[in-house]
Image: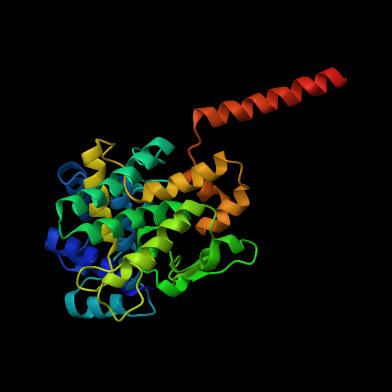
Length: 323
């Protein structure tokens, strides 16, 4: 498993132990009930968060009760008792839905995307006009959002991009060396390493934006590395910094507070589907293993649905006339 996964689960187990002030060999299902009540009633944790905590605790109990590691025998000999599994079907949250995120999270409309990108560009012009130091950072952040939307990327994938990740595509010579983008740090699954994928460039305006940034803006940053997005000190821009700048612009525009940079990825999927792209192509672009995951991302507009309905009705009427 990834180191971050292991450390995260360790923190959850330690937090549970500190919360109930009991050693693992004295844990009971009642302790889990008490902790879950605290998480839900007092801390207002999301359902998905509660379930992830329970999963970590259940896995730890599987380990300490496994006969392969002999912890039950050791505890029985030393303390006169032994650990048991405290997470059961009747006291844990079931994972019954494909998507457990906040309901307010949705694809941004085309108008919202354009509003955000225009606002980001305006911050560049404003900084230049006022002679402020942050003009380069504002230009970088404006391009970051264009790349997230233009290639349907996650924040972590965007953060880890290097200048060598763009490639020529013989089927799109007009895009130069930006015809495709290799994502080397895609989301891992089931303890595997990062999943790579090649994303084809389908939005020429986004290509123009990143090309302009790499040629005219990035060279002004001092760095010996190859990261695309550089901080003022030459380090790699972190996903958290992207999220914070997005939230700043979102709030200034008065957009829904549930919107995050990941919603731009949802918008990428939705808008490609609306424009007639093959769902299988979109699935490959965003790196989903299953079509059902891509479907969750999709929130096609009413106009698109009405267009599809009209086409279906026209086909039905045409078939009736032929018979």
